[in-house]
Each structure stands twice: as C-alpha cells, then as structure tokens.
Image (cartoon, rainbow, N blue to C red):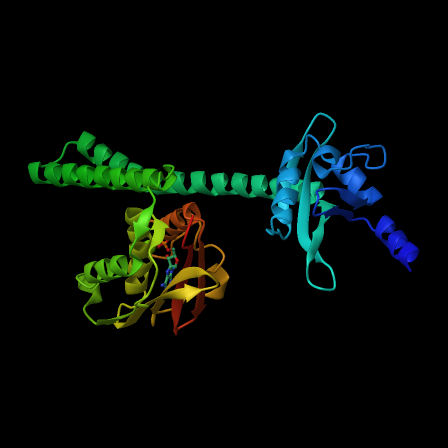
Amino acid sequence: MREYNNLILQCIPSGVMVINMNGLVTFCNTSADSILGIDYLKEKDKSYASVLKGRSQVVQLIKNGINGETYFRKQLQLKMEDINKWIGITTSILYDDKATPMGVIAVFSDITDVKDLEADVKLKERLAAVGELSAGVAHEIRNPLSAIAGYAELLKKGLQEDEIASAVDGIIKEAKNLNRIVTNFLSFVRKPQPVFKGTDVNGLIKEVISMASLDRNAERINFDIKALKTLPAVEADPFELRMAFLNIIQNAVQAMPNGGRLTVKSGVQYGKIFIEITDSGSGIPKEIGDRIFNPFFTTKDHGTGLGLAIVHKIIEAHDGKTEFKSRHGKGTTFIIRLPIKR
Ligand SMILES: Nc1ncnc2c1ncn2[C@@H]1O[C@H](COP(=O)(O)OP(=O)(O)O)[C@@H](O)[C@H]1O
Ligand SMILES: [Mg+2]
C-alpha cells in the first residue's frame, strides 16, 4: 500500500514535498524537483533550507508552515540563473492520529503559462484603453475648437458691435469649456497618491449625502442612510473616498429627474466593509453595462464620462472592488467593497 501511494505521488504533475517538524525533507517527488529546479536525491543535507537553497521565498513559506501558518495557492516568482518561473504553492500541516503536528506538506505547480497569458491580456486591455481614451479626448476637444473657429470666422467678416460682443462671449465660453475638459481629464489621468489613515466611512457618507441633497435636481429625492453603527474604521484616503462616493451619488441623482429614493447602506461582509448606493432611477441598459467605467463613456448631453472611471481608479488604489446591479426602469445599486486593513 505504501509502495502504491508512493507511485501515485511520484506520477502526478504537481510537486509534493513533506517536511517534518525538525525541518528535514522526508519526501519529495520528481515533479517538485523539476518545478523548483532542485535535485532532492543528490542532496546530502536533507534540511529544507539546504534542499531549497537560493529559493528563499519558498524556504520562508515552509518555515511559516512549521510555525503553524499555511498558504493556499500562494503565487511566487522564482528568479534565478537557471530558472525564471511563476509557481503556485499550497501548504498544509500534517497531523498524526492524535492530532499532533508531524510536519508540513507543500504542493507546488508551475503557473508560468497562466501568468504569461494574464500579462498578454493586460497589455492588450491597456492598449485598447489608451486608444479609447485618446479618441475620447480628441472628440471632446474638437467640438469647442470648431465652435471657436466658427466665431473667429464671423469676427473676420466684420460685424456690428453687439454681434462682435456675442461672438467674443462665445469664444470665452468655449475656451472655458476646453479648460474644464482638460482639468477633468488631468484629474483622471494623474496618478492618485492616496494618503491612508483610519477613516470613518459612515461620517463620509453623511457628508456626501448632505452635499448632494442641496443639489437643485435633488428636490424630489428622499435620502435614506442605513449605516452599520459598529462599522470599523477603514485604512483609506478620506478625500479620495469622498470623491468616489460623490460621483456615484451624483449619477444616482441624475438618474432620477422625476424624484425617487436614494439609499446608502454600509456594513461588513466577507471580512470587508461594503457601501451600497441604491437609486430608484432609470437603470443601466444591459447593452452598455460593460462600458460605463470606460473613460469618456457617457449617455448624457453634458456628461464628461469620467465619473465612474475615476471611481474605479480610486477604489482600485484602495485594493477594493466596484460592482453594480441594475434593472432597466427600476433602478441601480452600486456596491463598493474595501479591505479594512491594508
Ligand atoms: N445610477 C445610474 N443610473 C443609470 N445610469 C447610470 C448610473 N450611473 C452611471 N450611469 C451610466 O453610466 C454612464 C457613465 O457615468 P459617468 O462615468 O459618471 O459619466 P457621466 O455621469 O458624465 O455620464 C452615464 O452616462 C450613465 O449612462
Ligand atoms: Mg457621472
């Protein structure tokens, strides 16, 4: 039976290594050898530090395992002269029948191909985003520019005094418009430099709601806050978070031109805090669902299309997630999930 088990372990493509509590490697299959670029059988000193010499990250994980800390599918990059690859590693404690720890089992797999593929996809996505961004900027800038050119043509023709004044006013207005576009664009492309500190998210929600309720368009909207009283403080940049909440709440207000209800709820789930912003507005049509976070995507006459792109960037910088669900004609819920500690 022991022989048979051994055969199985030798034949599987995952690397398996067993280390006892004294730090000696008691088992290592051939896959572990080839994934880690080691030669277990030739190694005289069977301590894991020696068998795994040069692979310090792996050594550290095993050491932590002996101290009772295990990992699930941890990803590491092994960078050495003879090997350069990504490996996935899962460790667990080996117990005897009296539940006394006997050692650590480490299971390895080579995930280099997966990682390469991921990098490829990311690069393609980034290039596509840059293309879309440039097209967006060009489009946005062209409108006011051609208006300015039009006014200038009029001026050249020689006009009455009052006509001149209105053409000049037009030019000033469009120049301001250009300035607004550039400012918005810069606030989107600038790299956020968040300053993290313990942040009272419920307090931020209250501030943003009282700001939004002053909006003239919010007269017929009922605001409702369902905050979890025991919400823990979150490591975050309060200015950035406020900006993210405000952008989502502004969209919610704009989605309810005939009034409605806007509810903001906070709570803890899966060890993270969440903030849920629900409106009873127009909803987001399915066809545009995967584009709303794209910079310059807007369905509004005077929209910038940068609101949600900014939200997405801020929440990413906080290692958080932005999700939404929506039903056409019924309303929309945006959910932000943030880790409590960084
Ligand atoms: N709460 C919402 N209800 C309906 N549609 C929304 C909502 N939030 C966002 N959207 C859609 O997403 C688009 C992009 O939003 P955003 O990036 O803030 O840009 P903007 O508000 O300038 O249009 C909006 O134009 C709108 O079509
Ligand atoms: Mg917006």
